[in-house]
Length: 281
Ligand code: SAM
Image (cartoon, rainbow, N blue to C red; front, side, top):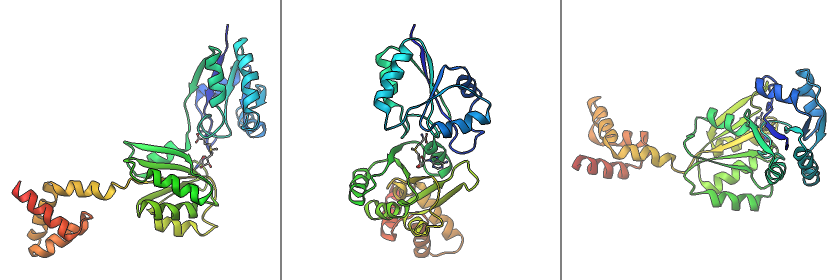
């Protein structure tokens, strides 16, 4: 009977971020396939787990996937972990999963930490639709081309980024996407955790200081829609109500419109056009 491949998420920093089920499975399987045996050993030692380790990383993935596939087919239970987070998410895993499926081996995911999910939910940016792009290309020209492809996507954009490239990526994003709200979530779950929010320009400036651009990081960029999101709200009664409220506070019509336009992120003429339209409606 074919064995089982368990895809086990491990912590992205804080060793407590692992499930009871993950610890039980890691202790029970015949073999744990991992990227760096020394790193995984630290985690296993912390929890007193003695299961045998075998390396499975990007340089031996192809042949190891075949070997492990055979062992799985012969009935072994294997857990796959990566250095951090969920295997298969910008980490090796895909080949072993495909190999297992081809050999009719059962594949069982054990959910847990994923850096970009933690970063997204804490970012304060919309979570209803998002695009996870993995690592942006290392070379500026390719990176800018990639960003240009994503310019009009109606989704929050998420990337993994290396500390020595973050300032340049933020600057490229500012140039290609225009000014947007962004977040750099750094060292999540670790001692120096930081969730830096600001405009792309502000963050590019901040992280051009190498002493600040340290550790592991996730870059999150708001969709272009953010201005028009508030503008869309302003088309309805909101703008009208705000202008009326400001007039009630003593501002004349002109000043009230000017202030409301600024608050809703609109030009004065656009606010006036919407105000007239909504008064007519
Ligand atoms: N498999 C991992 C996951 O589930 O998130 C991702 C592995 S990928 C090779 C490593 C990248 O993930 C880092 O360069 C960084 O961009 C991001 N990352 C991992 N741990 C992080 C953390 N604690 N805080 C912020 N970003 C992290």
